[in-house]
Length: 158
Length: 140
Image 1 (tube, chains in turn purple, yellow):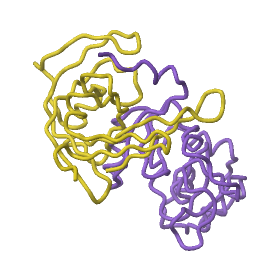
Image 2: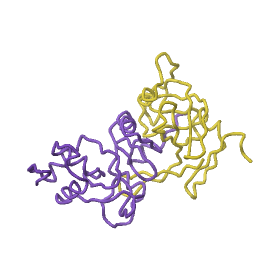
Image 3: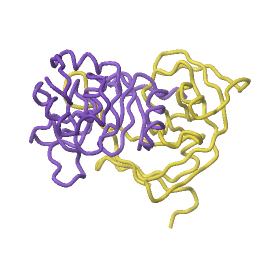
Image 4: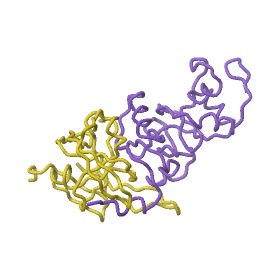
């Protein structure tokens, strides 16, 4: 694949692995779905190529990712936006997931949410707060996603 | 201020029964309000001790108490903090005793009598899946 005059050789699995320990930046408009999370296309292409983001456009980055098989979409709220609004969006025209299903990819992690959108998911609340601070974002709520009633019931100690 | 019940994914597929929660901001951590389960049976308001340093809350030398939660023995450290609830337009802040607990197995805080319920008139509409909170003394 040629990006900004440079030749690169990467596949979908390599991209997924490269993002495994990264956190997605806030979505402005366009996104691609990798590892069940929404990513700004330019962030992904810059991470895997090492190129400066000024070296390519959002559309070039988006096209590069869709060629690798990753779904792409536009965030809800933008003119012409389609698809699911949440972080687990697939870019398809399927009906919106319930809020609970939207959280499924983040089981075990701390998340910051605003409405039905997952702003960020990370292993610790400190990482979530650091991300919010770094990107000037404000969440509606922060909590850890569990998938077991047993972790919720019987909570009252006294 | 109205809070919709929040649902979580279930391990077996589908979602867990949506629970009544309130999102409470700690002073110093306003950008990430902490989801707290409304717990009418709990005396204390409790949160994970992990959150205290993120909000700049000093727990060294604080009064502590041991207790069990979910079958796990844990220790809570008391701090008086300013808490805030907001829905974007209405906002209410109050001074409250909060117990910051370590370890804390719960995925959320617990909003109990002291620190939360004593400050509000709370109306739970479980049928429609939401709760309304009104600062005490302001009801019509």
